Length: 263
Image 1 (cartoon, rainbow, N blue to C red):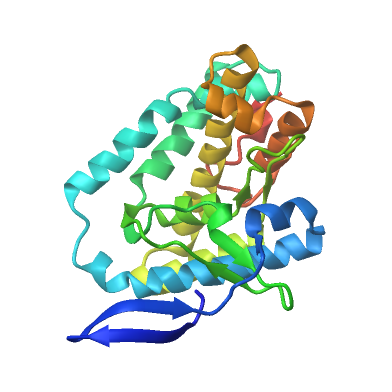
Image 2: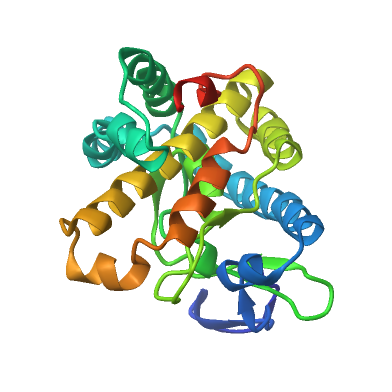
């Protein structure tokens, strides 16, 4: 989070605040240009930053997540989850076999059964800025706050989609190390088993990739919206880069390790 510099307080409530400058580049832009080593470091720093946000909202989470919030989160994700196996099969020029569908069902169950926490809702790599000097990350634009899965937050923040960039590609800053670091923080902040947090985060990361594959498939067949078609296109670069993201192993024995069923 950027440090708060001045504030103007009237009648006990701040009318405005100003924060330090975080940098000229978003994480979305940075991941398109950086080395693997820099991307891995960014993943660790991002895990630390998002964990700090989880800690800041922990008291709200402990007050209880409204049942309606959980129902709404699942309702928004389920339609995409229903097409996840078909999207993955298309992306890897494979078949949506019964084995693949069962494997994806396990991933979806793991992702959707995870606990929700209070925190940002507008989470994507363009809302993370990278400093020009020490590559420090700052999460910005926290105007929309609500309940969502913490693993989904981190995975989405870490995913560069290069929207609107000709020849743009997908890339993630997530690594096994950053996933473990974030999961350890979740276990301390919200309790829970470390392995469960790792598997839930991994499941959300794969589900995000499968949703991207479904959207990319729609672009390639002309079924996508004009806005999505312009933003992404269906270039070979996008297809191959998304395959790389999905095949990146984040946990070796979790339900999201379904690579054997993709070919």
